[in-house]
Image 1 (cartoon, protein in one colour):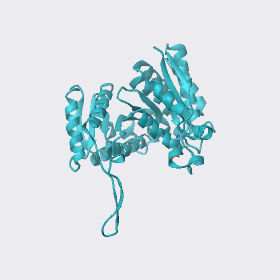
Image 2 (cartoon, protein in one colour):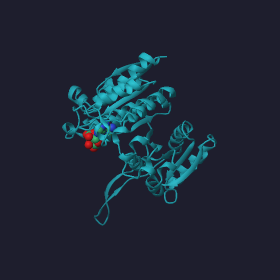
Image 3 (tube, rainbow, N blue to C red):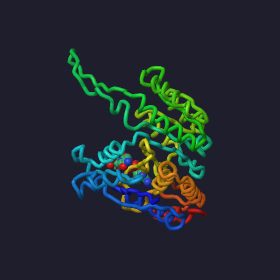
Image 4 (cartoon, protein in one colour):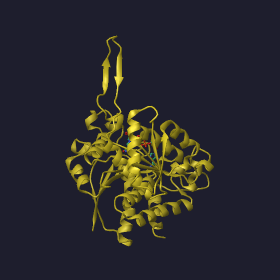
Length: 359
Ligand code: NAD
């Protein structure tokens, strides 16, 4: 059956990197029997400029109808002074909540060819391949009550509430166990159960869900230790599952281990594994329009889409192996360039990946 993909290029380098991902999809459609229909729509600042809203109704409708969404990036200085509701970033938050995307998957992969891009010693990170599954719609970021109140003493006090209901933990745990099954069958649940009641319940629910995944080796780690272990010995991890605030921090730490923001894809999934796929980087206004952005994070987001939503693992492997072969040929965009390598621009990198598919 033909699948429908909503393509939302967005702002800055978004359209440039999405263009390269679309080239990959078109080659797969032409030569590898992929049945997919692409429909493009505006999102972010460019949508505001055209429709006076960062997420026009037509775009939201398309995203809801599609089997998966491929997003570039949104935002830029031009729109920073708009009311919060009209800013480009608001479109992302609305897409996540309207599509009920509660699980955020962020792999941190360091291709051996790029080991010198990390600030850590090559032997610590070379070949790193871990996946962080972060809960995306609950926790202290959304918990009520929240606010700033004035105490009797006249002093002001800020407060937020860490909240997790059992079903919220269970559904993200199931996504993480299922992802571990597609990888090395190891899952580490990260919380702070020695101090927080919310974390105690989290651990209880994860242990309960684990009974359905006896082939996955489960461990638990406190978040402070996890932050330390990620820089000490990151290769000990396969999949990490954690709550919204801990995942926010740990996934940025893990991204930095690889030293190359232009290489990292992400997925946000709903209960039926429908997903929104995007590079973790932003719209990079400093390099937009120059044809130098690294498109590999977006191309690798397409690989994730095949693995997690479209159930085409061989196409996912095909793309990931093509990327690895391109790196073997010493081709590098500016952000991952080191002396002696061959520098290419955005379209040069995209074309190289396309030419390596299936080879
Ligand atoms: P950024 O990720 O856009 O850029 C950070 C640095 O990394 C810049 O120096 C940039 O040139 C470089 N970089 C990023 N992606 C690259 C790529 N593919 N190839 C080569 N270099 C790359 O973060 P920022 O500068 O903090 O934010 C810029 C804008 O993007 C802001 O408006 C921000 O709100 C928005 N943003 C959007 C998203 C999103 O759409 N998901 C995420 C983060 C930031």
